Image (cartoon, rainbow, N blue to C red; front, side, top):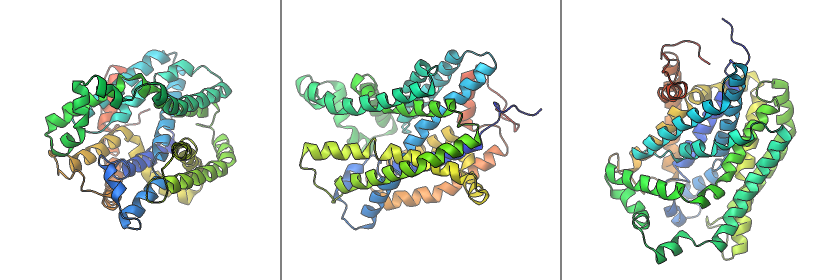
Length: 403
């Protein structure tokens, strides 16, 4: 039976998801690795220094932008299907987010870094509040989310005691454990790392200031919802028209802002002597640099997808994207395996060049393994688990066309 347009998979979205997984893996093994504070001592001009600058310039913050945007797009696609079948959008989405939340919690308890899954399951609730808005109204909410997040990060510290001040006044067990996180991550057993991770998560996710600072994640999801409502998800003509209109601006503003941020950052290229310097630098990093450039990448890939030669190259990322949850957890497992004592115990010993080499070596493995798996099974293993939780029944894993 031929699928309706609503039921058909959108290959471009799978490519974008796969591309986002690759980019996030690159950042997580370089700029955002657990011991990234050691990079302040890198010798300017060294291979590790240059690698770190390039990662920050071209990948850091860009792919989490893309991944967050795609979650909003995914919500629109799911909403479209639920409405078409007279289903309840809210109950379906709540089940889906609760499944993502549980997977994220269990992964972190097993020392596999997966904080973003918990973030998405929480901020994804906001999509239910705004999904009935018009596209223009959604854009206004997107701007408001970014403004509140940025202003909150600047204003809250001035009017609310920092965790360090609070700890000095009322020391708690959580504060004491939080101070020893690095020591436990470097030398602790699996159970010790798990305990510290879960306490750290509890401390962060029960602090209302955390949600103000990360409200831009909801803004990016709502931007994905806006793209769906604008018709850009299924209509190729609208995709191309929109991408052509915004790509030069996004790439131009994004590259320029990231270059200014890099020049002002503490990579041996700038002076951080004043608060004014820090505020301006942070603005160029986010929101004018990283997310704008990430959206520019999405626009560029959308246009490249119309060229058959480029499409063949880009579709190599599609199997990774179809198994995005599984592949994301795999990248977290690799980081944990490298870092912790239950694995190779190389905490603090893997620097940017080595991290990039690991990503480059594992990317084709992910591509081939994902393609092999999907040639035999309908879902990735964690996608199957997530789907079973969402629908209340676990589908067969046999290879067949699935929506």
